Length: 131
Image 1 (cartoon, rainbow, N blue to C red):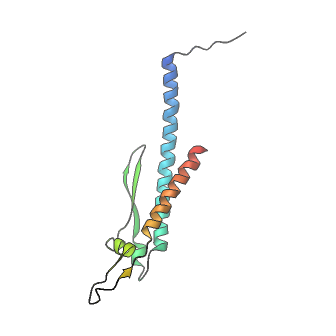
Image 2: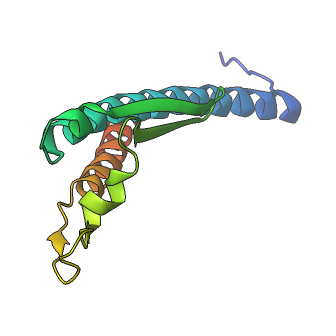
């Protein structure tokens, strides 16, 4: 005794599309969570590794969601209080005043945090998607 199950090509197409949409939605949620969590970790890392004189620069790191929809999120990590100093402290600069030949060396902290964040997001997404 055998049981035959009939399925039309349209039903098969719909079933495959439904399964793919469910998978894509799950991956999108995983990606958004990984990006949000990594942005928070990046802010903490920048606060920890930023150069300190008074500590105000290090305290100024923040994150902001620029755009979010059901499949995408964009988060900006920035220094809200001393944004003018970021490039000078990262790359180094010549000081003002009388000593124009001197050079204040940079303290690369932003690029390291960005590289770590990119690697961390990929690692989290791969771990969640591959099971």
